[in-house]
View 1: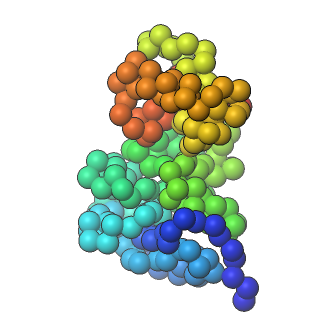
View 2 (view 1 turned 90 degrees about the vertical axis):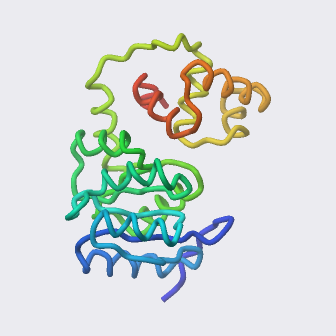
Length: 221
């Protein structure tokens, strides 16, 4: 079987958390085809996942939403607060707005459906491991619907340009890419990022992502 080539700056370690052994077996088989990915642990519930994260410090936890003892959203919230170096990618069979909204609120970096292709799953893992966010293509419209369900106000007094930069940050774009897309200098982008953090009181990209969602900026572009 040919190996799937994947570009990554360093090996990406993964913990699988799902209470169905067949699901874990299938995912492990998929990921074994990527030389830069390594499954270093498996859990059957959220509590076991937390124990593995504490012990192994993986790059990514690929975790089901519905598990016994502790569900994926509870575990994701704890991982975000206690082990910020590990990024959570939620795996689920559900695509309803409540689940998608809950994932973002819990601090997970992405949401993919169990029936996606191996290629998309690998892309999602690489994206969140490298600092970005990933939502399964089938979940995109649902995420938009969930965001549209609430009125959008801007209590922060952001300028139009600051909103553009905030939206780009939320989508995981690096400064150089933001500058190119908006036709401004990298230094200007850095200045906008600083102003954004001061205005909205956020210290990291995950918090800025939540603000962007609240303001409806993820619906654009």
